[in-house]
Length: 359
Image (cartoon, rainbow, N blue to C red; front, top):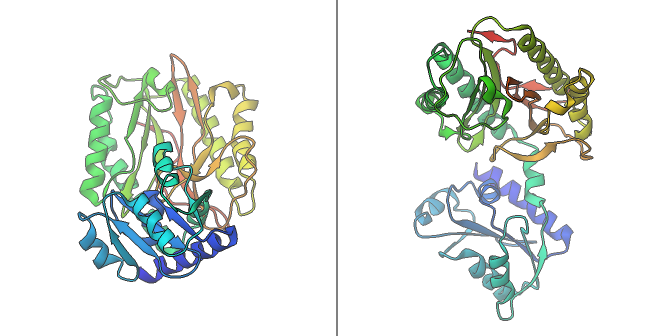
């Protein structure tokens, strides 16, 4: 893994040089993990355009950094950003790029006030853009996260029945994922039953599931830092015509979105492939969120599949495809897979059936 992280840093250093900065201060925890392999709640990296890289963390993680990141210089400090800015100045750095999307105004002000400190310039989303395209190691970890999600969902399926509460099902799913080998859930599990299914990010509560409910279940496992994301909607008992109608429409839209997720596709067009089907059926106003997003070291990362977005998908970029229809007061449907964009055709990492599960 050390070679993988070294290669990532070398590519990032070249991007810093292309930007015209002398160095970059990386403070986003997922970005530092991507470039170093270190897992820490307090870390940063000083990435010069050329020359040795410095990884910073505090004493709680110093031994882990020495063990896992022996090929970089180590700084052990509690307040890392100002310490690294001072180190950059000591090395003759005139311009220091920083992650404006992650740094607070207070942190920026402290750096800007350093005597004889380097000139601060925005780095942009340089590392996040590198992270979009996954290497084989990352894809293997992501596939395992998705497999654990599938396994947990299958194990819990029999417990999704009238009388169980949303909260009970969510906790059972999360516990099962960890029991099977996940680090943790990738995010707070959503279990939205009956009318709650009309709320895309409903927080599971004490409502007991009832016969006739559509139940939206959005879950994912995190494995060695990589996040799976899956949604399935089940029906407790035979579906009513309106339930079958919107389920079939969402499933068709989801398949259209997956099929459109090819290298070179404009992300807004991928969103439109699914959204237009739903809109043509008269439910455009019942699908308010984006079609999907990238997944990796974060459960929501670039690229974003949103209406009108102009960026393009590339080979080996994993994204979610998750259209939905939400009918206030009645319920909703969402179907979601984690999909890897490939030239030979999209590869779906989630294997749970997309057919409506009638329990």
